[in-house]
Length: 81
Image (cartoon, rainbow, N blue to C red; front, side, top):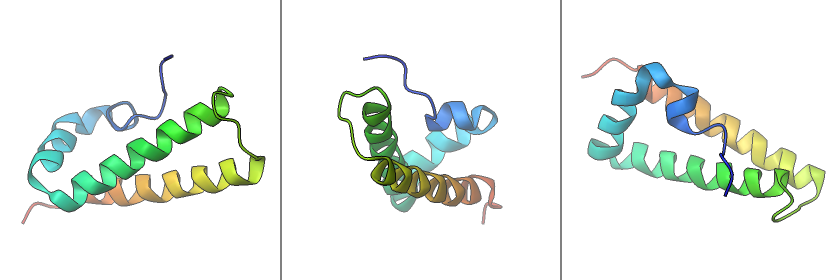
């Protein structure tokens, strides 16, 4: 499979250690990251015509990915308690 853009470590390279930390210690973050990863793969398969889909469906997936990315970023940059 070709290289897939938009992986979390590529989107937030300056927060790579924090991503790893939260994936390990925060179950909610780990679920969000996994959901992001799954959406990202679906979008990539659609973009490369491995699993084509209608434009509206692909756009809806992109919007979901963007919303998840916003949630993930908020968690990554939140102050530690």
